[in-house]
Amino acid sequence: MKLFAIFGDPVEHSRSPLMHNTVFKNLNYQACYTRVHLRDGSKLRQTFFNLGLSGANVTVPHKEAAFQACDEIRGFANEVGVVNTIINEDGKLVGYNTDADGFIYAISEFKNIKKVLIIGAGGTAKALAAKFLQENFEVTVLNRSQKRLDFFKELQCSSYIWDDFQVQRYDLVVNTTSAGLKDEELPAPKELIAEILNNATYVADAIYGKLTPFLKMAKKKHLHYKNGADMLLGQGVLANELFVASQLKKEDIKKYMQKSFEY
Image (cartoon, rainbow, N blue to C red):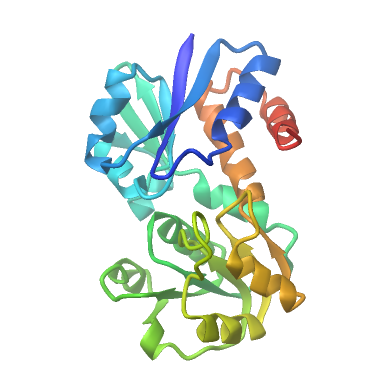
């Protein structure tokens, strides 16, 4: 019986155990998936081995710490320094990032995206910015402070803090911050968010499982919006493929993972 987990702070809200365990159960794969509340990201590697895990997902705020915890990084994660999926290969931790492809899957119904505004500058924002640029989107990043914006400037994204930001028209606005996850906070001052949404076509929030204050404002303005559930599904299917080393069919994984959202 293989054991998998998700690391995060907070993590009690995570649907990942339900998603992955539904796949394992219905496809008779001998594995179990659980949650691990990890406050200190520097202890991720030690905790991973102490629990005897075969693999793990990593959520906020530990995605950059997960990158540091790995022995080897593969694929897109190399470009962004952010890992959300770890595989134990004979005692060697191998890191991947499935967030970005999961998000592209999630917004596939949004048409004619050219200009994107990302709110926040953490691990999810890094992955999305790099992926959006690969998709030839024009990317702007808005964060509370300057200290995390260097990465985005190196990518040639337009980068601003709240005080020096001039709102433009955006095809898509994405909140990648944790504002609204455990509280009723907005990802930026209310007046600024209102002006941004007045100039947006589509709106997305990486948070799932609730209508955040950010999405409530979007709804009031009759904007086409979605929460992070589709992103969660998209990255989850890709992560599960890695967990089972492609022993299960992707179509079957997706089928039962989608079914888990009915529970």
